[in-house]
Length: 126
Image (cartoon, rainbow, N blue to C red; front, side, top):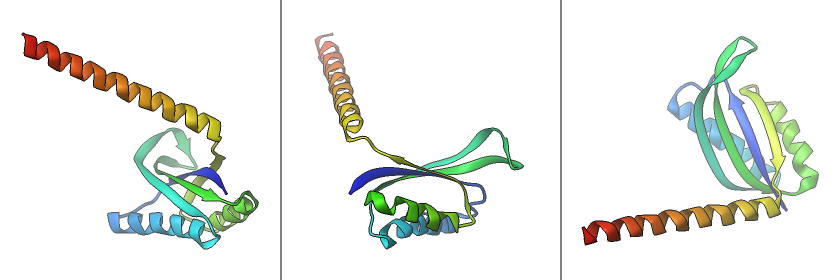
């Protein structure tokens, strides 16, 4: 099993209930072919840099999942049948890069906590 990010753009999302069902449907397609959804990130509605097929903006969604590499093309084919999807990009996650990014995030968090503690100590002294 390998990790992937599926980045979706939807143009007509409708109401909140319909959007929740759309997200569930995208996750369901992954589970249906034997994948495992790790997390889902709703990035909200954003304007396009320039109009695409007479559309000014879209709603962005990213799903991180694990799937057998042999089944990725099957997943793409299943998503191609869904009319609501305006754009789709599936990217394989490099475990080495992911590890480096996690390490950098942990270091940044540690620096921020240290700075907050130092600021708190200076406030107490004053």
